[in-house]
Length: 100
Image (cartoon, rainbow, N blue to C red; front, side, top):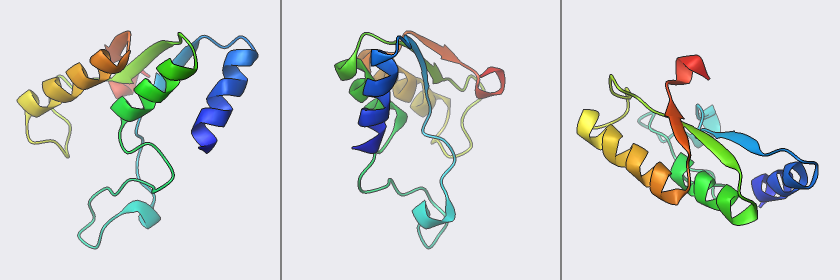
């Protein structure tokens, strides 16, 4: 997987802090109704990326957190569950995307 190869290179070069974001989907990764679809050769969600990074090295990992709720989520409770998945996967902190 390309992301893993790049992260391994960063680890080998001494990079120890990563920001793991799903990011905005390109038009190629949107369904017919405009919803996000993961790339078939990538990480489906930020929690998967965190897990993948943590398997490469003991990175200090920041992730996005949405105290007001992410526009695509099912509400604040769903956002808290998603943040918990990221932390359980190895994230060290959650920051609001505006601050990243």
